[in-house]
Image (cartoon, rainbow, N blue to C red; front, side, top):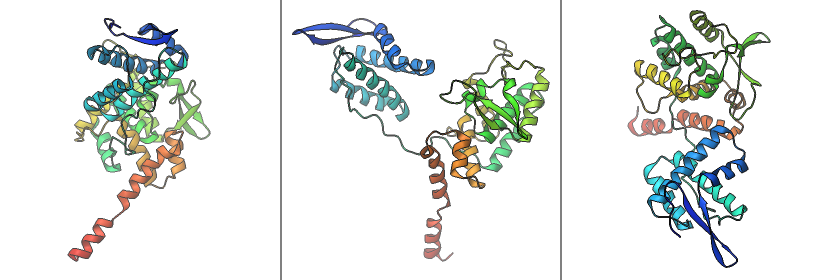
Length: 319
């Protein structure tokens, strides 16, 4: 069977003793998407992963994938991408071929193929309380950009919000609950803003100072807006928030690949545990579905508090 041009390859299956061609293409991908019923963001991730596999298959002359081909593809991913990318790209391919087998289109040649092994350690570092203070004090609040950046970083580092949750927040989501101010959020995997985080008094003041300087009162307007020419007043992107956090981290002297916007979320969890917060409270703060995810923070802190090396050194060197 000849390989088709572009991002498609021919799959064949036995039908009455003959091989019937089936093209692995965007049309077939669309059928699969309607089957999985995933959210738009997940669909886009799947689309990217499958297209990447199609490009690899075309470049390597793969017209009828076998298990050996999938293993070769996995090895290629491992050699050229970080473990998280390998895992997500291979997961999409495995789900796809699982579906082709269920539909009787093509055998599941990716069955029981393992992806990259990931460690349980977080890939990003966190900041100490003194480092957070230095970061926030470095931000100049003399203009709208500074007021906004300060408020965003203060909000993330005290509430543990994800960047996407900050992006989705509207002015009207800042509301009073009981005797405190809360920010209602559209959390990961949620369809409505049913959860909230408590906004500390100092952070609320920072947000309101920014909103007053911005002069926006429409409750449906984004809580934090762009100041760029092309999107002035529009909603920020996760990339923009990551960028402004990184810029301020570097300006404060924290220039490390392991310190990013997500580090501020890690910092919130770590400082909460260090200052008396329980594992359950931290899980609720970060809105982890599985407490095992939260326990990674606890395990990391347990190792940090383990002073075995120092005790051994004192015994040897008499200090």
